[in-house]
Length: 306
Image 1 (cartoon, rainbow, N blue to C red):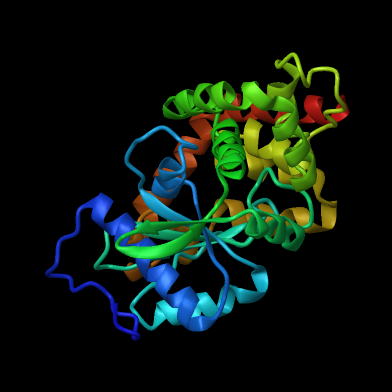
Image 2 (image 1 turned 30 degrees about the horizontal axis):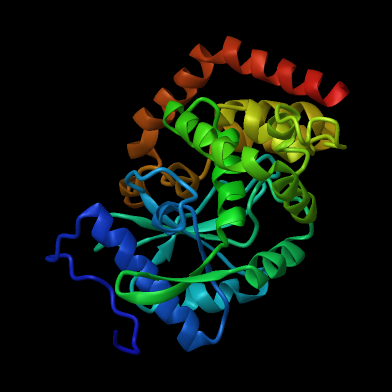
């Protein structure tokens, strides 16, 4: 691969699996040239180390130190990658930046923190890096997690999205592997600050059910209970001081163009009024889902009070 990062030509049509593997090679190449450390997580890297069932991924996930984030982003931006702009709100705590490129069908999700690991983020990375293993992906050597660490990541990702049925198989897959040496996996989860989120799993295994499993932090409760963004907005609105409620409510009702374009990039190039139909549908969806949203908020508050 050339030393200069190159974007794919719009005329070149990449299949999704090709895009994922080539973007893995690209990120590994950039990391080496920039002298930074990057771990491939989830996706085909996890499948290669037998920590996830085989299936098609839709993006590439990587993990690095927050201090190296700008170095990687700057290098990739030179090759035509740019960040999707998330909604700026305390209701949506950041843990990653997602990059897209018009010439590639898949995104690159750059994590500096992985939800579920609640030890200090730099401590988590160093512990994961120390146990790393080398693989080859996209025709280039790369670093990924150890099999045991990758199993925890697969399990946390699946538990974080209980409504996605495709991930139910991941839970069974991971539990099947973890149950043979559950104490070893429990000890590792404690080191990474994941014993609370993984408590229900370890509570169901004979070797670990009597151990101290702790309680999951609020961030985990929110991520596993709120199945729609409106729930997070409403919960945040209830929790914040009265002086901050008007601004938060305005932001929820009238989000910026960049916030709206997170899922539909074509909205970035339209005027406010051209977005009116999309904004109306968004408000109508929030209204029709109101009962379910309130139910989720009540469930979150009940879990917090336990």
